[in-house]
Length: 133
Image 1 (cartoon, rainbow, N blue to C red):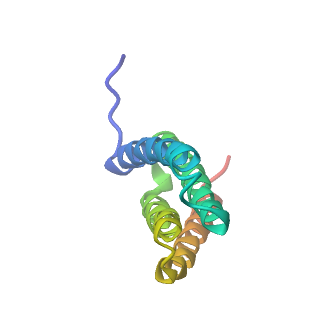
Image 2: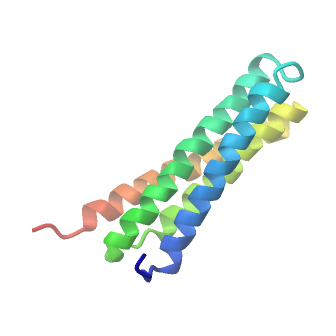
């Protein structure tokens, strides 16, 4: 395998995506098997929502990392930061809320949603700025 040089943000996106995907699978399995008799109703649904959003955005980090290797001028560091913040604020607060039922954690979830939305808007803007042939 050829040793390819990639930027730090690209590598960070790829590694973060892989770690967050691992955690999504682990936390999803834990939720499906370890919590089914402990956490019920809306709390279990909130937990599942956290896993779902984490999975999609972690997969997006892998895709962004791969794209940024090919299109260096895209500069996706800001999207990486926004999606990572989204996962931490949205998904992790969903998990904590589901496990503790403390309303403060539910109140932090929308902040993560705003980070996700800002990441998608930023990605769209950066893609639109690219020169085309």
